[in-house]
Image 1: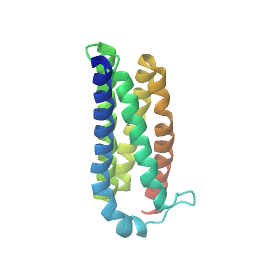
Image 2: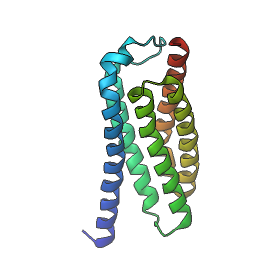
Image 3: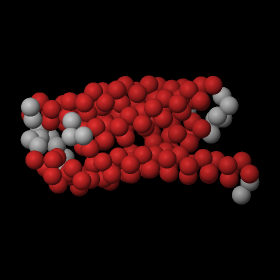
Length: 162
């Protein structure tokens, strides 16, 4: 394999591992709360069954990793690429933070604040990614869709569980 292609393969692997790792960290905060605190909450009728969340998130983290690698491929010395990847890292941190706050700290209110910030950060990331790589921006569309649903769920849970 030629050196440039091998370098890109490493970027893809690193990007996916970082994103899936963020998901793993979030799941450490989430998993213990599901059968206890989360199970006891009143939830809206459109709440997906619990078994849906893991495969959806694993898939979304994979798409996020691929998207990040497509942007990274354009050259990390490029200022727009650096900025896009910084915004991407901010949204990834907010993603993990939401799991810690909502599930770990059992706080729907503060979770709602974090997920709104996350939603905004994802939109900014998508816009920045689209300017660098159309496929990278497009790969994040399912992510913003799912986080929109998660934000609605979070909001309803906060309202239904005073």
